[in-house]
Image (cartoon, rainbow, N blue to C red; front, side, top):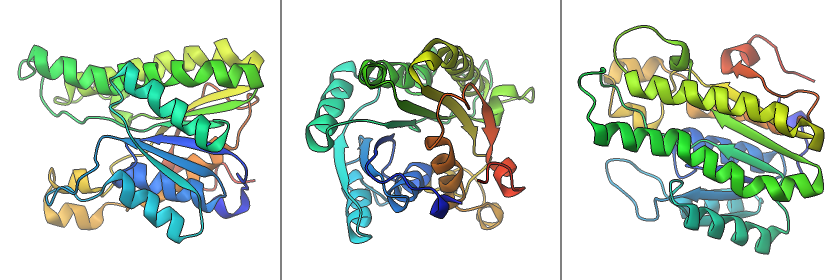
Amino acid sequence: MSGAINLSGKTAIVTGGSRGIGKAISLALAQAGANVVIAARTEKEDPGLPGTIQKTADEIKRLGGKALAVHCDVTSQEQIRSAVDKALAVFGAIDILVNNAGVLFGGTFLQTTPKDFENVRNVNVLGPFLFTQAVLPHMMERRHGNIVNISSGLAESTHPGNNVYSATKAALNRMMVKLASEVAEYNIAVNLLYPGMIGSEGMAVRVPAEMMERLPKPSIVGPPVVWLAAQDASFTGQIVRVDDFGKGWGKG
């Protein structure tokens, strides 16, 4: 699907792009022709959780693409502004923002401490809020842009556990669907994607090995994000699932 979409000349920022879903999204956008800015905190390799922003950037460059690795904590307004400034200085424009960085927390309501709550909320809700606010004035001025948010089906879950995580993803959904109606007149598309359970590096430390073998690879998320990143405001305010694309939805 992504092979039929040409994003040449466009620049995308992907948060949390050092590994897992974020890395897969970065590679897919680059393969579609986009310049990719990888904005994340990981600059040094962690033996237990491989991947860095520079490694993702280097892999894109080896494939013939253009990439920029930028250290950025998505909960820091100052670091976000710096990342946006660097992206504009190198590539001249920002066409696409993928709010992918997130923290998974499986605790029940009573297992969650105020510190846990603050950390999950800050990364999963405040981060997309701050990053989107940082790029929107530029997109509105150009009357063009695309915001893709990686959410989760747990936003709609009623089973025990993942209480605060689910709440943050529900908040992200509502915030971005409302934003879509606010910026449609500027031809800015704002959508959300549910990946489902993915066999990422982060998931590998949470589930048994036999389950990991059955989970889809992060690369399955790339084509749907590329398709969403190519949309204009005629397709906005939507929450879609990776599984929908597997059934043929979103082609063309």
